[in-house]
Structures are given as structure tokens and as C-alpha cells.
Length: 261
Ligand SMILES: C[S@@+](CC[C@H](N)C(=O)[O-])C[C@H]1O[C@@H](n2cnc3c(N)ncnc32)[C@H](O)[C@@H]1O
Image 1 (cartoon, rainbow, N blue to C red):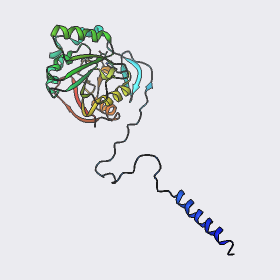
Image 2 (image 1 turned 90 degrees about the horizontal axis):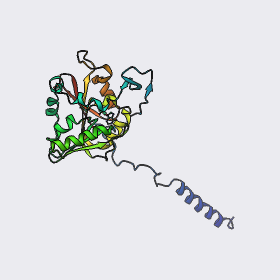
Image 3 (image 1 turned 60 degrees about the horizontal axis):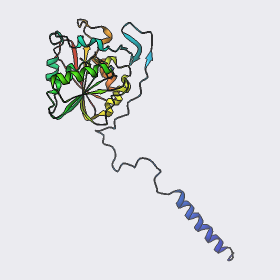
Image 4 (image 1 turned 45 degrees about the vertical axis):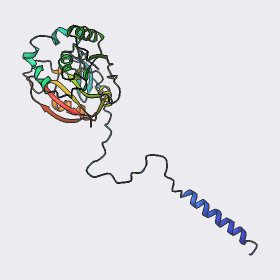
């Protein structure tokens, strides 16, 4: 027995060491444990669920692709610049009231997404003398028009910018605000566009979303070129934006404000 004693002692030490190894206090790789439990008043924001597009027979004004059940409209081609620039626009849509309601710091950077002829971009540029309006469009002809008009008007803080159908192509957290006037409903890839806008806006950055009111049959615009507030909220909230308000200064359009949390 006495000859076995050193062997038993070595075996006991080995068992203690092995036990210590397997119950190592080193945490497994992964996010560090929070030192304090999450507050009951600020629940973590869940990642937005990916909503798939669906397809169906195209109606005459649509592309047969649906997002949250809404059929996406055809893109308005550049020959319609004349319609965007029509003199009756002020009387019909009161864009000057929308411009007055867009609140911007003098050094703010706003992206006018789907800027078209720049009807809004040029009028807003006066509000940001130390900032700029990034006029984003996917049609190079629209950007050519914007460049010519900037030169004619002597405006230097409207920056034409070519985006793609899926991406505004702007750096992360580079925008204080974004404006979409009658353009969102014709984005062929709204989910991707909203994700790229989320990336480009600063936290707290705002989206001003103007769309013809889908709830109002008196608004003389084709149904696919209108949106209801409920539909707009469904689409933008599911992309991670917070609904702030729907101001009602305009005769035909919603004036909705969303925020990147
Ligand atoms: C109906 S026009 C509105 C123009 C302008 N916002 C206005 O109210 O005068 C819509 C514009 O959105 C642009 N557009 C469509 N899809 C786009 C996208 N994914 N990204 C940027 N612009 C887009 C079109 O090329 C078109 O110039």
C-alpha cells in the first residue's frame, strides 16, 4: 500500500488539474457580457425582418412586382421634365408650403432622392447656404438637366449624384435628412433603397416622404402613383424607421416625416 501512495497522489493532482481546465472561467468567444442588465424602459431594437418581393400580372402602370402587397409603378422617364416643371404645379400641389415645412440647419446636408429636374433641390438650396443638397437620380439625363440649371441659376450647393436602382451610393452617416417627392412609389427595389438610406442617414436623421394621397379619390393621379399613409408606414417602419408625423399642409400629398433611430 505504501508503495502505491505516491502513485495515488499523482493521480489525485492530475484529476484536480483536469477538473480546473474543463470548468475554465474564460468565457467563450462572442459578445462580452453586459455589466448591467438591460433597462426595462429601453428594449433593444430588433433587426427588421426581411420582406420578400412577390410578383403577379403587371397592371398598365405597374411592373408586376409587389412590396408589402403594393405594386411598384413604372419610373417616370426624363421626357416628363416639362410636367415636373409646369407652372400650374404651385397652384395644384403647393410645393412652396412643403418647402416652408422642411426644417433644416444652414449647414445641413439633404439628399433629394429621385430629384428629377431638381424642382425641390434648387428651392431647398437657399435653406442650406453652408450645407448642400445632394440631388440623386438614376437617369443621367436628369443629372444633365440639373447641371445645366445650376449653371444658369448660379447655384453651387446642389450636387447632382448618380444612384442605382438599389443604392443611393452615399457614405455612411453622411446625411442630416432625405427628401423623396413622388419618387418612392416607383423605386423598383424599395427594400434595398431603404436599407441604403438607413446607412447614409445620421442617427436621428429625418426622411420627408411626400406621396399623393392614396386614400383620397379626388386627387387626380393614377392609383399606382399614390400611397396611403398606412402603406408608407408599413414599408418604412419595417425597414427600421420611426414614424414621426404626417403634417397636412398640402392639397394633394401626404407630408410624412420618419426618423432613423
Ligand atoms: C416622378 S419623378 C419626381 C421628381 C422630383 N422628385 C419632383 O417631385 O419634381 C421620380 C424620379 O425618381 C427617379 N427614380 C426612380 N427610381 C429611383 C431610384 N431607385 N433612385 C433614385 N431615383 C429614382 C426617377 O428617375 C425620376 O426622376
